[in-house]
Every structure is written in C-alpha cells, then in structure tokens.
Image 1 (cartoon, one colour):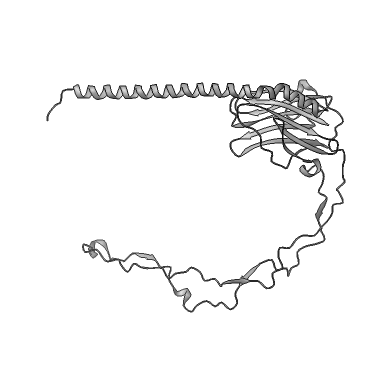
Image 2 (image 1 turned 30 degrees about the horizontal axis):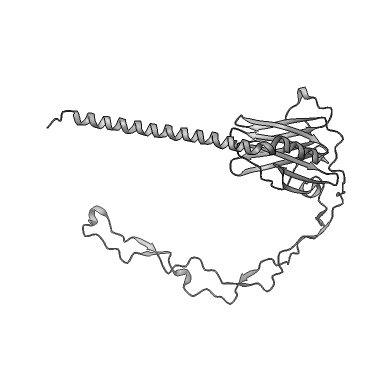
Length: 311
C-alpha cells in the first residue's frame, strides 16, 4: 500500500484557499521547483466560500493530471485535521479524515485516467421518423370562433371623466384601459398522449477500440520528494506530521500518537480562547454603548441649560 498522510490547521478561518501536498518523482530539481513541476499525486482540501469544500485527489498519468470525479467534503474550521490517502496495488483507494473513512473506490472508475470502455456507435444515428414527443396537439380541439378578436385590454368600465376636466386645456379625455379578464392569451390546442411516442432515443454503444485495461494505475516508477502547495488569500495554515509510508498500520499509529491523543485538549483550549475573545468583544461593545448613552445624556443636559430665546 501507499499511504500519504498529513495534518493541517487553518488558524485564520480560511474562507478561500487550498492546502495540498504533492508527491514528486525522484530527480526533482527542488531548487527550481514551481507549481508547474511534474508530480505523481496531489492531495488535500480546497475551500472557497460556502460552495466549495472538498478534498482534491489528483493522479498524474502519462503527462496528464486527473482529478477525482467524486465530491469528498473537507473540514473548514480552525482546528487540526488529518488527511489520509491510501492507494492499494489492486487499483483501489481510500480517503480518510481524522482517521475516519470518507470515500473509497476504484482508480479506474473514479478518475478518467483510462478511455471509456464504451463509446457511442458512430455508424448509428437517430432515425428521421423517430417520435420523441410524449404529447401532441389534440386534432379534435378547434379554436373557438372569434377567439382572436378578444382584445388583451379593454376600457375600464368604472372610469369616469373628472368633473374638472377642461377639454380645451387638457385635450380630449380618454378612459384608461385595464387587462381584459376574458383574454386567455394566444390559443393553443389541448395536449393529448402521442400514440406514436417511442420514448427517448438511446444511442447504441460499442466497445471502445482505444480502451485497454491497466492494472498498474496505482504504480509509479519512483517517489523522491513530498512538498506543500498552498493557494490562499490569508496566511496562517500549519502543516505538520507528514508521513509517506507503505504501511496503513504505521500511519494509524502515527495518527494516534500525533493527533488522536491531543485533539480533545486542542478543542478545549480553542473553545476557551474563543469564549475569552467573545467575552472581551461583548464587554467592549457594552462599554461603547454606555459611553454613547453618557454622551447623549450630557448633550441633552447642555441643551436644557441653554437660555431660551423667544421670538
């Protein structure tokens, strides 16, 4: 097995940013490494507003980078969380967060690394006489005589010329118009079931001649370095406890030692600090409000002491 595991703590309450690790092949020129340097695997959480909170898992294969098709929710609070990716030699994978399984499956199914097994038959097309409309106009339904003569608007029968209307000054009075309650819009025949309806046409598929199974999708020639890729608008992310292993048990033991035994204490300390912060903010707010009331009372008292001038 291949196990990639690291912890990430976003102390700044990240609202848009990504924090990933990249596993590189041997021979990486680390001095000149950039975000465009070729890598084997990229793994980590991506957060942007409320719409994007997911774990990216990207595998490089034959010069192309392939992003997982599944949506794996990530954590977005200010506590430490551990992200674990397990890749097995049977071409399966598992993603864990804080030691808990969040997703698993097949490399061939959950990534578009290989061409599709089936493709649409290029020799087939929808027949010209194929009927895919489930409904049709009722041929027995006839537009009522005079239907098109019904106006959209009519003169308001309740309108009356104002008594002070001056024709010479105001012009000829015209009653306002209102929507005609008898107007039904453009006439349309009733819809009935179409007796010739055949259902949606499904394009026949054939085996893809370009598809070839690959039982080595999990494998890479080498692993030479692991790096951190950060895209953020706020600083304050802490990466720690990075491990690259061939043993799930070793990664689990490392997680227990570096995360599990500390998480409750971290949460308690965070909650205490948050309470202290919110209490201080509330005290500041109350003090400001008291100051505002005091100033308003003093101004009111000054106004009352001013001599009144009668005009």
